Length: 469
Image 1 (cartoon, rainbow, N blue to C red):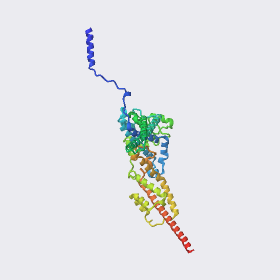
Image 2: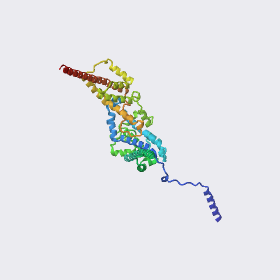
Image 3: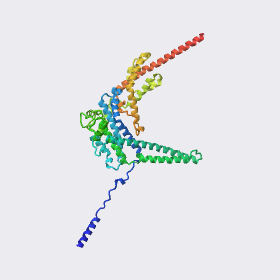
Image 4: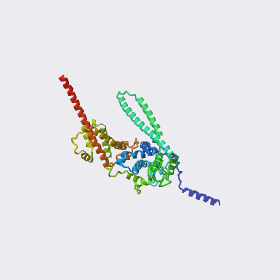
């Protein structure tokens, strides 16, 4: 019996010796996650854009979009008076801006440890196209407001860090130059004092790195960005009445805005007094066979009849602004400036202008009543055309290469510019401005010449009177 017991023990020991020893699972809290480091400045730029997008979707700004932006006289005259089309453009532009931010976040998410965050790109596409949110990344309004404050704080601290790093670079450059001068015995700067300032500057930078995005892990940062992006997309769909709102947004928004059921779907939540447009109206403008972002990108492609398709929107904006200045002060416009303006005109407008001015060569522009009528007519045209031209310049400057990392300073949208303006209608308005400018320019020159002639005659009469006396 004892021998059998001993054999059992030996057998068990041998069996255990062949078992693979499995290492203990690592404690997630002990895993050292890599920090974003210098990518903090790029991430702060992405957060700034998300903050701007969220601000654009707040109640007061969406009300302004409907009551002011798409109601501009110039928009109705040369862009479109179809409210559904204009709101579709606004929705498409906001969605496209969000897609570009999400594209950058997708690239950064590849550095995360969390599997779900590494799959951000796929999850975002699924949410955009089918509304799937398996990780409940869409936040309630209260939660989003807290994230907004956190991102705003991160952006401010990271911007301060950027300034302090630049200042340190300048100080170190001054120190290096001072050391060279010191060796040449020409230094008038206290080296030790400058070294002390650099020391404290580095301490300040170290403190800011701890508090800003610099020392945050990729997982922490991407989680914040991903949740914000999902929530902003849900907000876009809510504002423009696309699909069914997430339950978290439905509950939170009902506390701060009146929620009414839509005609299409009683369970969908609407924005304030309803969405800016019905889902059916928006869907008519989009190809349902495409994904959400693909259909929006198609909507942003300008039709062949527009200035955007002809790549003339920016050029015509500059042309209109030059004419605006000339019309305000025609007496200051010289012959060279007039020739420069004519050189800016494309062949189509030159042809229209020649037809309008045909037979008027050598005419006298001396009628003050007609000049006054032209000034009034030009003022009315500029009243609705000039805002679109100025908006085009603002929109373009904010998206220039140098400004891409900065936050837009205005809420100008593409529909408020000349990008979608009808080419023929815009050229007709510009031609009218040129004809009117031509008249008042000649009127001012003739009045100036007449005044100079009368002044010369008057002075001659006085001189003759003195000589005769």
